[in-house]
Image (cartoon, rainbow, N blue to C red; front, side, top):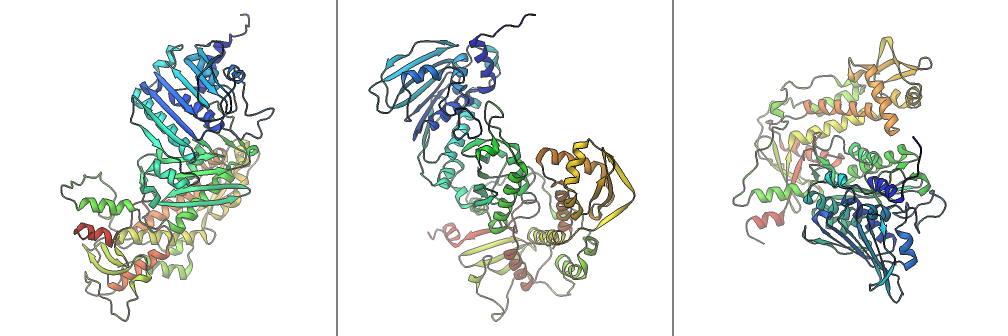
Length: 604
């Protein structure tokens, strides 16, 4: 069969299949063009979920008639010249407008700043009309009608109008977070109007417009750097979580991205602090030399590739964990709000799914000696005191009445002073400006886990030598990756070494894990390193085991505590990072301000 040159229209339609997947893709490309043109006001109008109409109006620099004629041709752009090593604009491929014009009815009206009149051009299914004079305000109006009318097969794959309209809304929100100085207005016959006023340099105020005012009260600011890569943004406290990952936003040099490396790092940073099936809320912005990141991976430009992915992952993990360690133990304001709602007339609590609870877990106390983990005698005694119930034969009381001489001023302590224990599980403490209710089992569980995890990190973990080393056959490149991380594995009790050109020998495994599939673990670690250039899987498994043991070694629900024990628990919580949630991600305490309590009684 003879080879022939495809027509320009068919080439554009093929390109449109990658660049313009749905109306939201077209909206993204047009908004990016407006931002690159220096717009400070962008208005988006839609109809039929963007399939019938998509109009983007901006007050940017505009285009001359000559620019308009070139703009609808493939690979014509004003944003790069001869290299892809220094891309500092959102668009650069020169494919969006011709791609849209090949599958839809496209019209562009533009007027350059300072020009006396505007100009317009239209493209329908690849057929271009000549540029003509047209009345226009400074800036550009791009109107797309009947998207995919020229490719009916693609039209069949679109979702409902509501779903497509929602996707456009999400696109606008991501752009709005990235550029808080721009005013965005999204309107149309298929939606209610969304107006996002400019917040200047106040990124948190813009984020609050998108994620809600509650985020401001539950966000921890991030500001970190490593090897000339910066990370800024905000991470939500662990107890401020959502049912999906749609509230996680990532930006690289101002470009909204949906990169699996970044999302994986966020998930790893919140490990052991978020309940299963829940997701943290975070907005991360990475600043990096354009030469060290490839934004040309896919025509949609939502995926990126970093030259050093391990550096990026490590920066995110370290920054978020440090922030959570610094401030993540504070309670989410949503807990207090939920409590306030429950006091209101007509409140009907939802019947929750069957969660984990102390009553559904084995009642046998955790008895494995801490020495098995290499804690040493001092750690053994500390662990025993920490994890085992009190052996004193006293009659416990529900009210905490410490002597005046032993009681320090309430104002000195963020979690206040214990005043009572109710239902043998909840500690009520008075703070300087309200009260705190603590779940004693959940709180103590977190304290034990953090103590165990610190002990595990302070020294090489004990290992058990295999009587016969296990030989694991792997591709040569996987062997190289594993040996490069052998030092990290050694600290965690896993000893490996090369065994010929295509295999590694496992000589020791972590004692904590007991009998295990060493070959399966090694292959899993090799896959992880190949994907992320990190080897955190083994540490995560050890953390999970420590969390499980902490659960069984903690103060049980139903045990009465003396005043000194309750106050000691509060003081340990204040000194322990991450104590605001248990190992399963549930909150360990809820705080009510005095003003909230007074509102309940109509005092304010």
